[in-house]
Length: 114
Image 1: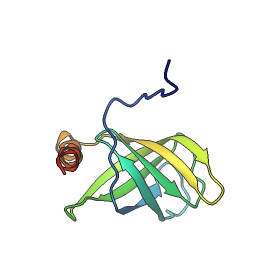
Image 2: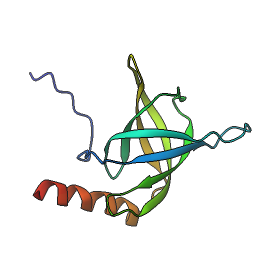
Image 3: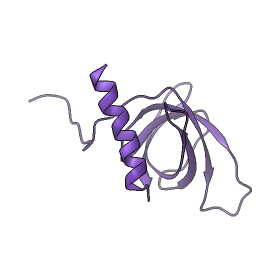
């Protein structure tokens, strides 16, 4: 039996980009946080952040794609892996349109062919 317990339904891809997130479910002044994207699929995102975020919280995000277009989306943080210098998070897209999901999936197809 393999030690790989892959639970993802969609292939994950890395993008060289950053995004800004603002917490939505708080009355506090919005705090923008730059993050480093590790990987992204049409349903979710993995990223590093130097600021602690809350599991279950929903953040507004502006994801800049390889084509330089920006997708406005919402991300629910579902996983946290503390690291010595940063926090590694996993999140799922909430309410992302099929068109925007397809844009991310197209990148995966192009990336596979290269």
